Image (tube, rainbow, N blue to C red; front, side, top):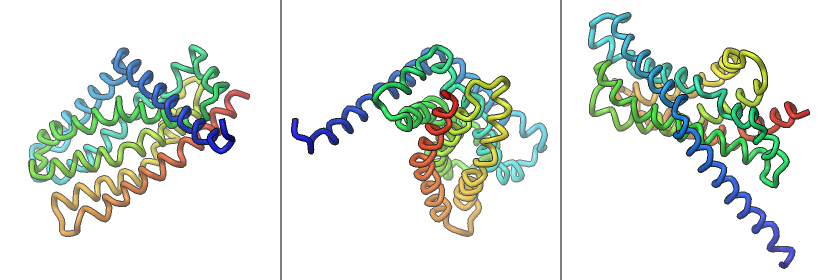
Length: 236
């Protein structure tokens, strides 16, 4: 094989290996089901009990709905964040992946993407149903779902950093939340701004929406590198 072909061939093999790892993680997550069910149940309960605390004022519920839906989604996604690497760490698969030909950053990206597919996408698709409980306008539901689908990749990839930093630690869930929640603030700000602008105006929802896209893209590029560095440190 010519020397100039080895790079692209290696790249194609890495992509195939990363996609195979992604399909495996998605299949395992749906087969186990527990983490997804807990996240969806938590999201449902938090939003459903909010009207009991805020009162029966439907206008108030509609005003707080964007922020409440985003906060509940972030907390629900965190419930399964520590499982991004935990199962593979426990059974030794992560050691094998680290010694394999696939770059560790690609492994981290694949596992964070699997968390997004199996946890954040179902939460985003459940949001319109829960929004109706909060008197959320039906005509704004498309922008609600779009903003959550675009913003939640940042949620999973940032969670990957926290999961790698706390890998193998006792009571890692609480520490992971303390590490990751401050990093979610930009996602929360621009996610709520997008939906609020679409519901109440007067500004356009697209400037904060584009910022949300930029945050997700930056997270998808940079977070796997940080997670891989943390994983290498934990293997020492």
